[in-house]
Every structure is written in structure tokens, then in C-alpha cells.
Amino acid sequence: MSGVAVPVRRLPHGAGLPLPTHATAFSAGVDLVAAVDDTVILAPGGRAAIPSGIAVALPPGYEAQVRPRSGLAVKHGVTVLNSPGTIDADYRGEVGVLLINLGDRAFHVERGMRIAQMVVAPVNTVAWNEMETLPESERGSGGFGSTGIQGKD
Image 1 (cartoon, helix red, strand yellow):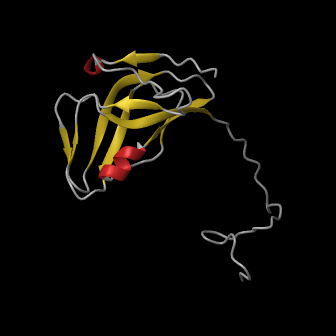
Image 2 (cartoon, rainbow, N blue to C red):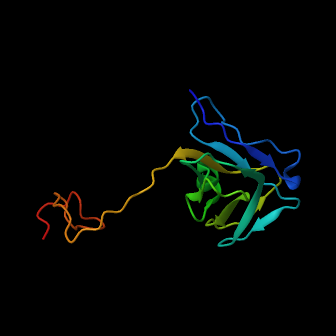
Image 3 (cartoon, one colour):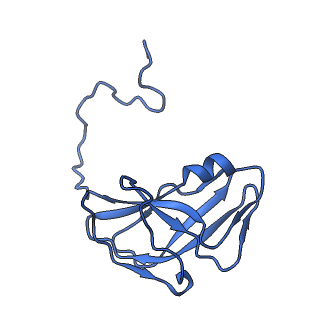
């Protein structure tokens, strides 16, 4: 598989932590780790912005999506609040992870813990073409839950 070259800067509080890596040869995302000095305790219902210790320079035409780790979600109820969080190609600040604890017990975020995954993907820009009417489609204006319903009004 070929990859996209992405410049990455390790920030001072990320010293000693691993750079994002693919866990396996076919992993879509790379693991982001917590670059915290002290344990962050997320109470049930609590949320916190957790630093990753890195900043990236994505090439034009790409974005990075910060996504939850399924293991944290199923075992602890911890997920990424604004999932997926988008990192634009022109952003040069620290990659942060907004975690929320939807579980029923406090969750401890420790330094170096894998807290999220990040997927780098191509994006398209949009050129809007304003029209008075839109072309017809089989679905029409049916919204939430409208597909697959027999005899809908």
C-alpha cells in the first residue's frame, strides 16, 4: 500500500511518546496517545480535551478524522464527543481528542494511553450550483427512517 507523506511535529509535552502508527498492515487509522502529564479522571458524563502531543501539516486535498477506539467504547463507554473530529489541511495546532465518558464508572486517562484513532483521507471541495428546483429521485424528500418503508405516504 502506498501512503501519504504527512509532516508531523512532536510537541514538548509529547516527548518520549510514540508517533501515530498503524497497528497492523491494513489498519485504516493510526493510534493517537494521551500526552498528559498527570492522570485525567473522566467522571461518568464527564468530558475533557486530551492533548496528543503532535501537530501535523496535511497536504492540500486531505483531512484527518479523529475517531473513537472501539475497545474504549465497548469496555468503558468512552468515545470521541465530536466524532469524527475533523483536522483541516491548513490547521497547524495540536491534534486534540475530545473524550466523553458515557459509562457508569470513572475512567482514568493515563500518559501514553491509546485514546483515539486518526484516519487521513482525501476530500473534495464543492462548487454549489443553486437551482429553483432539484432533479427528481426515487426517494424524494423522505427523511429520517423513510427508506425501505412499504406504502409510505
